[in-house]
Every structure is written in structure tokens, then in C-alpha cells.
Image (cartoon, rainbow, N blue to C red):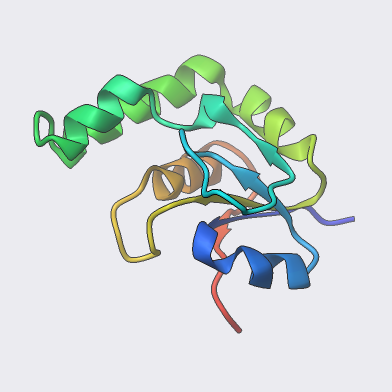
Length: 125
């Protein structure tokens, strides 16, 4: 079976479910009333970094540096194992719409550069 990991956002959860994907949160908080198949808090940015970005204390470049460092401390093998525990068809979700700067895009880039998998943003067909 092929492994297909995607990124996406919470407002599309019902669509992802219709496509048979497991919905896994990678954000610090989750929307109320949204059914998730799991949560990977280790793949969300640490709260200090997140709030510093939101408050304008750091820029996107510093945020990216810190988040990539966080991912490197986990390691690509463990990241893939964490995701894969939910199956072969997984969408990693957070809050931001696709065109906005978001850690899920950084995570996808990290996986794409450090493994044979290709992670894409799940878009409507």
C-alpha cells in the first residue's frame, strides 16, 4: 500500500473524512466539535515561539529556524513513525488556510527534504 501524508486545515475536515483520510492535529489547540483521529503535539510549534511570532517579537525567519530545530531534535525517522501510527492515508491539520505562513508547510518541506515521501497540501479536486 502507498503511504500518502498530506497537510490541511480544520475547515476542510469533513472533506478529508469523505476521502477516507485520517485527520491528525498538529496544532497546540483544536477546534471544538471537530472529530480527530489523533494529535501530535510534538509536531506543533512550542507555545513560546508561537506567541512570540503572533506578538511580533520574532519574525517568520526566526520562527522557521526554531521550528526546524525542533523537528531536527525529534528526527525524521521518529516524525514518520509518529505520523504512520495513524495509517497510510493521513492529513496533518492546523488552523491556517493554505496561502498563509504556517508550520505545517515547514513540516511538509522538512519531510520532503529528509525522506523519500512527498507531503502535499490537500486541495479540493
